[in-house]
Amino acid sequence: MRISGVTLFRVSSQLRNVVNGQWTTTHYTIKDRATDPRWKDVDMSRESDVYDVVIVGGGPSGLSAAIRLRQLAEKAQKELRVCVVEKASVIGGHTLSGAVIETRALDELIPNWKELGAPVHQKVSSESIAILTETGRIPVPVFPGVPLANHGNYIVRLGKVVQWLGEQAEAAGVEVWPEIAASEVLYNEDGSVKGIATSDVGIGKDGAPKDGFARGMEFHAKCTIFAEGCRGHLSKQVLDKFDLRSHAMTYGIGLKELWEIDPAKHRPGYIEHTMGWPLNVDQYGGSFLYHIEDAGQPLVSVGFVVALDYANPNLNPYKEFQKYKTHPSISKQLEGGKRIGYGARALNEGGFQSIPKLHFPGGCLVGCSAGFLNVAKLKGTHSAMKSGMVAAEAIFEELQAKGEDVQTIDPASYDKNVRDTYVVKELKATRNIRPSFNTSLGYIGGLIYSGLFYVFGRGMEPWTLGHGKKDNEKLIPAKDAKEIDYPKPDGKLTFDLLTSVSLTGTNHTEDQPAHLTLKNDQVPVDVNLAVFGGPEARFCPAGVYEFVPSEADETKKRLQINAQNCIHCKTCDIKDPQQNINWVTPEGGGGPKYEGM
Image (cartoon, rainbow, N blue to C red; front, top):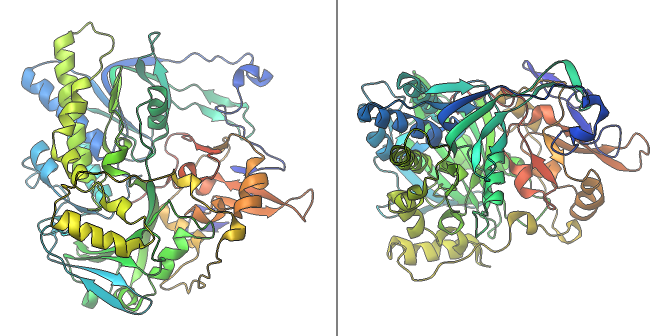
């Protein structure tokens, strides 16, 4: 199927995994190549390069770390080789956020950012918070101390900000490598992190080497910074290997559209946040809607966040988002406009309770890889940037202390230092807001708690609430769940899923193993479909997972994986009930190509 130049596979056999049918998982992380005769005579050696610091991920935290490292090296007149590897085809191409940002970290990192032309110009001028009913709107007061108060902040297109940060990094002497997917963590003999390897290319859908097969490259470093964003697949590995997390993270999925609206309706600088309808009272989530003028365009960023700890397997986050736009107070702002962008991304909601140990021999975690999003404020960019800067300072100090001949460092001071900054202090103050919404009173109880203990108490209560079970463990069987009726899309305000995916610019090399791997090919049908009604077909915001009739027996279903559609949101890796889906990186350059999202 092809819409607006983007291929969306529903029928083609390319990049489609058919489970309980023709295809099964063929990725080498599941099917060991050492036992596959097709790989017997293939040269598996890899070239390598050596850096002082390798950074995985070209987002706000990774680029801020890179810039700060080069600033410190220049000030000390020291040679320091730093590189950033980014799986997107262009820097900023996988970045998706609301976004309203605080500039305090940017002020610290690049004080003259205005003079250098940073795409940060739309100040928040007015704002509102409301609880939505099906047709009505109950205003919530906004005043200093309310977590979502945004006076003095800026509305941005974060992808453009990240692109600009990439340019500043290159100007500072950082080697920035887009379209390079880090696929493997490398280790020294003593167990410390040695660096990363990039993905192999030229592997067929069936898992066999093609004529153009080429091994990835190894990037060795004295310190490797993992800045992949929420649920990074290499970050997940080091979290497990070094046993860094003592409390589970909880997540949400954020869906976003970019609209060009009627200029008569445009209010540059106006923002609003809502909770309530269309979600049930016991379901955490809400919306954002930001008016921004960019290059003369009257734009609105509109989005919807659904916490992934929901219980009903029939809930469909994408359709909840579409339904939200039909509310009278929302539709009137969008009607007559044109939707020009769509995307989705998982986000951390665990906050202070879920911060892991941040360092280990040979590396550290920064930004959303570490879980620094403040969900109560719906902000993480300033925290991500600051964490990258603090990590850079700790790494540089350790490199200076150990000397040029050191093989690997452990930036232990980073953990303590970042906990002494506003990054963790903010999270500690708001630590109980998110779990306070998990009682039987739902968002009503959460609002009462937040008012009593944060707005007036500033988070000084001597207790810390927990998040309970992991998100994937909270689904109830389909037989016990209520059906949810969603309206059909009208093609003007609300849209079908594949039309939306066509706006993401998503593309992957066609003939490669699906990067949505299954640990057990039988689980999707035998467990997920049989017990939970196949929730992956609903929680994925890109139409990757479908249960379709089996060719062998049309009375039975099989799972079809449309890997071509994947927008790298990581929701499946989080919400799959049995944790059977393991997201791994495809060939570099694959995935969405967001433009200023």
